[in-house]
Length: 230
Image 1: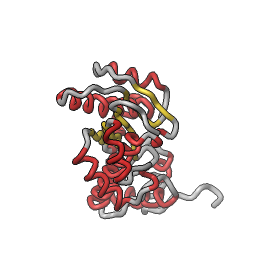
Image 2 (image 1 turned 90 degrees about the vertical axis):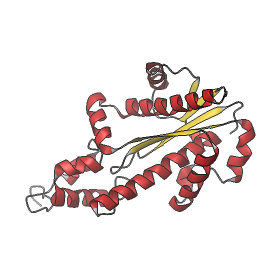
Image 3 (image 1 turned 60 degrees about the vertical axis):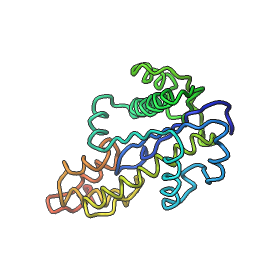
């Protein structure tokens, strides 16, 4: 989908992943730059391998005005304890990315016509978050927003940063941290709790996920607690 004017695309990564950060990225591109995005193979990041994502990420960062917001688990958990609403946090991160790009564009004498994000919650939350940091720019949220090339490009930046963060955390804990929120995630969480304690899990994972409670279901010997009757 093509939108006229200078468009900021915004998207996130890590929202559904127990381990690792929440990442929101924004990228600015005008109509004249869309052929470059197409030629580079920009599309929804979920359809691109992690290796290819890193190559595209470097190309996009070098060629386009952009901003990436990273909320690592410690910060994420503190903020979630305060607001108890992920969509509020997403709105705040989207607003920070948009505001930074607006500022960068202004320094280059560029006018922003619209900011487009993938749909994540009530539209007024993003408007309120932008108003809270004194940023005025027209915005729209779209279901399957990655159909807009600028949003697809932003999804690549967000995914690439998320993958790098997961890799760094895995190196720190000396365990490969899986993506997503599967049973495999639960098992790795239990191993971390058994080896390093519950407080450590809060440093690498999002504690409001149900996975957190399941990972905490270990006994004093680090084994998963059995339900009565099992």
